Length: 184
Image (cartoon, rainbow, N blue to C red):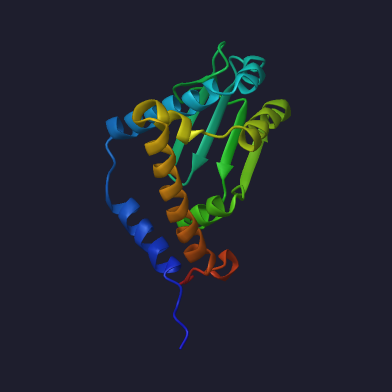
């Protein structure tokens, strides 16, 4: 007996929950600020990344997925800052894939999501370089808090868990995920 994939059900669940729960503006703003702080923390660990972004200072990047969007401006320090949604962005990145679970599946396999790119080619190349070369050294950050041994053990445990999730999700190929779309 073939077990049906749970992924279409979970996608539908995400759609129903996201569509019915109003997200307060303050929560969205706070989440965006936290995300920018994390991105900047990771960038500060990579001097080459900051040097590349410094050449793009003042440029605005718009990133969108479904109902979520954020606009970032490159600072003179080579980091990002949130900006208001006014005027045209120098670069617009729109994630085309709508399924959050398919995006997670792609991320676990190391694949980039399909993105529609509009705007400055050089800025897009710099963002692509960041996506290809900048990685968060989580173990290093944890070792500052917990010490080297516990940080290493925790990262190893999370890595094993991630491999298990990746193996589980890998059983459901992304190409076999089909949504029922009734035109009526």
